[in-house]
Length: 452
Image (tube, rainbow, N blue to C red):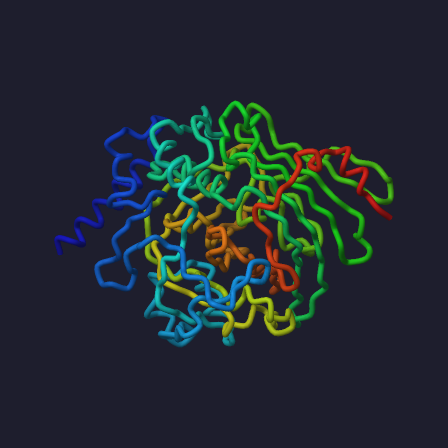
């Protein structure tokens, strides 16, 4: 009984902090917990009371003997067995540990289930990211209004969050390598299970995370990205450049697009918020990419505290280079046999649309991994307060770097009965920390490489 009362008190304490108006920095006494009872990124080091969540012991799994740089990251846990499955028949036993999206999938789709495995806390990043996070802990703060961050560079800004916005900014500023090059597919799936593959090549330079970065050197940039469409044929030649900013009140995101029919590069202010994302049949809007991206200014954010739930984790089967799309994509959902779910602690953040602003989602509930700050799932509600879409991010530890991030993202549309998978890298592995010149991330270069 004492433990239950303590848990309730802690829950109210965390939630209470979330609704305060203070923008104060973390004090040194709180920050001193990092690397002690908390991990360097702010997660609880200890496991849970009943042992179903183990202690964090550094994260990074040992690379399998058959792994060689450049190939898909192979499963370091090939012998792990399914502990149990959750389906429409036994959902009531587990409802307190499920997202609303998973509840709807389980209740409405007889062929859908969650295969639950032992929990492995594999999330990790390089030591310099840990060091920078500990340094940021007492200097980072939200700008007035929360539409940006100052006093932070390289690491996570708010390892011990007190506000919903701080947790969301941790996701936006989590480590994903110094650079990232990848070619991936966009796969919108019909009710009948058919799909047309879109294909995109992307290069990203993460200015915020570069060794030796300072706030002055950032130039208010988090990252710059160059993308080119490779399929389907009707879209080949399209491309875009995006500059993502750290203080979006000071300077909003900049984007440019190349349109082959016009042979021109144009500013692209539509690359933001709830504008439809191309090659996804309207299932995805811009700020759903990477689970959530861009300015948070259209929502009020509330930190609801932590919760233990079943989330996609260590999803190496879905990441496999041997997996073909026709094996993964079924009617109404991906093949449950390929998905892995584990019990983890997540931060729960509720986003409610501000009065006077617009977005197709009136409310969203975010489930953010305490170990990595990767958003693992989101419930998306329409203007009638009905669950419209559900996002989840099967994630892995890219142990060659290391970093923990989504291998793919799945979005279920409950109104249309369709779903979308993106970005999925069947053909190509992600390439981290490849040397890139900042000159390629310019409108002039976008025009130069434009084709068709």
